[in-house]
Image 1 (cartoon, rainbow, N blue to C red):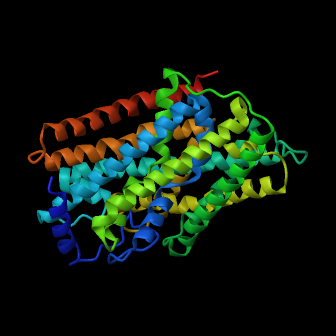
Image 2 (cartoon, rainbow, N blue to C red):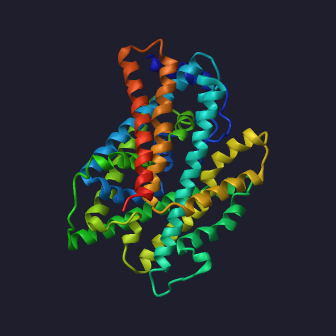
Image 3 (tube, rainbow, N blue to C red):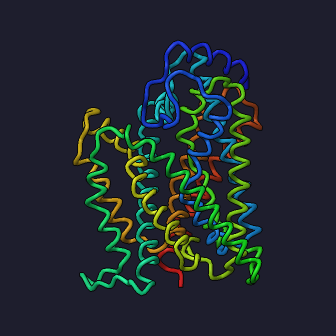
Length: 426
């Protein structure tokens, strides 16, 4: 496909003009390409790994540990391939001198005009909002588990609301204030703090899992049956979501011809980390594995610190996750000007959605199936097909079409499966 030639021409063309900050600009680095391979590896890791990993052991319980491992590594491979499709597509467009492409939305505009940008923008808004709904569900469930299962139980008959709902509603006024901040420059370091907390929590949980496994070995299942296949694929797709950051990350790397190798190593490392975390959690608690694995941790000071740390981390990360959505809606509905009521509207909508979500991991499957499959699989393969249609052979056509069709089927079937699990399963 001439990717090497396109990369060389792209380097020359892209170096003439530094990429301006946009909705997908990485928090670590930016501007002129200068990231080392190690920094790019770290940026990819930070862009992908998040609190969703805490729901993986529950997904392993639902689908079986062997099935989940196969799904994780398969989704990791396809996600990597689709990420590289975006890179190749951008390089081809820039090499042809069509336009400057700095973000996923720019790529959509270059390939399909205003319609392409609109599709990408809508998917990003829904995905970012969905991630934040998951954050609120996690906070509500975790605080309810931490306080309302102890002797310090906080009981309330206010409007017959459950403790989870009260905790979520209690976050609303503070989130309205945090999300009203015009610039998030001072909140950016919280992204690093969030990843440190996530990694610390994963380490503590894995040590706890190993301790439990050494004392008892509950029965586990390797395969969960075909009925939960789409559910597991949705969770896996959610776990590797981060495709909107790939173009900015590639732009800021010093040696761009090494980007594919670094991205592949990052994805392999993340997949191995996810697999180990999911297996240990499921092997430790078996059928008693909760939707958030930290809920299985016994009482104690360390357990409480981990749970509160994760809640604080997600509470302050929410404005950062919503910022790409704010930039899009303000560009479309407020001529690029700051608009607090549009931001408040999204925060209120996310809060109301969180109230109606009963299970954290089930919701991950819903977002992964309905949004991440489209954003991570269907759109990249479709854009690549349109741009390289005259240069690819029949094998390239078939591969792109298989990804588009399979991603669409997985998205639709996974959405139906996740909704059934959330609201209709016993």
